[in-house]
Amino acid sequence: MGRIGVFIERYTITRSEEMGALMRFSQAARRLGHDVDYLFRPDIYKIPHYNGLFIRALTDPLNTSYIAARHAELNGIRVIDDPESIYICCDKVNMYRHLMNAGVPIPESLVLHEADLTRRHAEELFARLGQPMVLKAPNSSFSLYVDKVATPAEYIKIGTRYLRRADRLIAQRFIKSQFDWRVGILGGEVLYVCQYLFPRKNWKIVAYGENGRVFEGPIKTFYVDQVDPKLLETALAAAAAIGKGLYGIDLKQAGNDYVVIEVNDNPTIAAGLEDKKAPHVYERIIRYLMGEWG
Image (cartoon, rainbow, N blue to C red; front, side, top):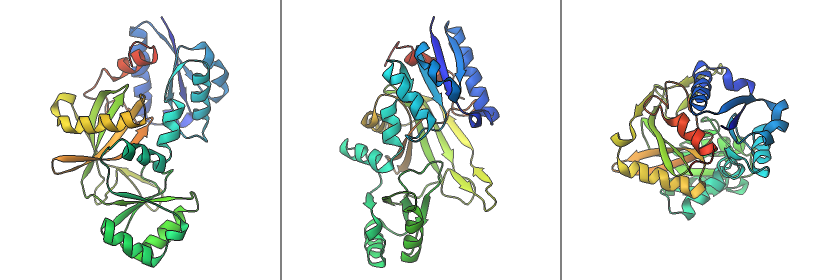
């Protein structure tokens, strides 16, 4: 028998799907003979008393979740997500460099600085990457601070806005699609596969209305043995370029090939969605946290 801590924030349990996933995780742990406790910020000091820590809160080196991850690591406790994965994945420039160094296919991408926000440079980028192209802030998430630009004026306007929160930008070739593949990987093994379909008349997984309303498309799930092995091979290579933790690999399909859009640490696992055709996902996370594999 072991003890597993699940670090959460109040916003973690605002959606029924999120709460449902936490309940399924707890039930799976108890079936395997382990105790599960939910830990909030004031409980961080308790982390050394657990055998494993599962973080289900937004991860960023500036967030409390990173402190929880570091605390676990310093005490020799296996943690998802590990601090190194958080550090890499929360900076897209760092993440893309890891992928490129490992030879993982990604859309052609360039790192930009403030001096690059000129009309002349915009025209050079359009000639190289195509029109439109995508601009990303390195610390973006949930489709925020990711935009298509089709003119030099848009390039300068959006790039200037993004540089208020970062000192670098990413310009990337746009790949048209109706969905993103998501492959969940833990310890070098595939956990689940799904497609995130885009909301109607949008080109990203999440869209935002003028009033702050959030629009998300449906999720289509697959059994692992239903999908192209090349998709899984590409996703596994991307995960290996980052580490051995839990990752959600986003990919786009271009003909018979796949390119990695990004690697997400702390990927979403919601009851009835990502786990729909992968009910074993919770048990495998528990076994990983308890050091039984990986």
